[in-house]
Length: 204
Image 1 (cartoon, rainbow, N blue to C red):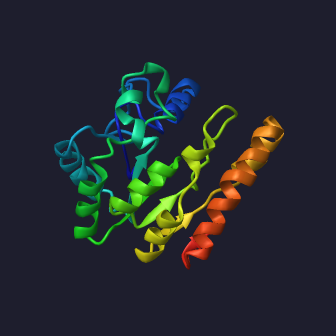
Image 2: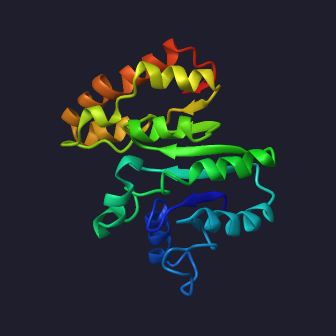
């Protein structure tokens, strides 16, 4: 357990599934805070849970930033519980400072271009997922397109990017038109920008 998320944030829906399967104890809390994840809403929450994390001798720290530009909006919408929520975008820099003070890398799980940008600014050592991972038909393409400046900033800071584009195969099966949009307008352009920026640590 090394991940920090926000109230009702990813990966809570995964733990909900485990609970439904009977894999998790029935008496665990609905948000699984301190049991399967760390749910934080303030810097004090991070400080409080960081000691528990250190007891596990972690190799890294993971934070979830999902649609961070719409954090307040999604937090107020019960329908977004899970895959559309992560930490308050103001908190990861504090988490990064704690992790780095102890020589731990901060891995930030993202979905959108805004998440990528905020992760770079917020002290990430590695970014997990390429913007677009959660793309579906009807979503705005521009929300998942990083810029030349974004790629250059990540390269300058030596941030590793684990692209995780295997989801495209599933999208191709489920929605061929959405797959083509995601591939041609999001994934390929984002990869080209990162490669051209000199992402020596780009992990395919």
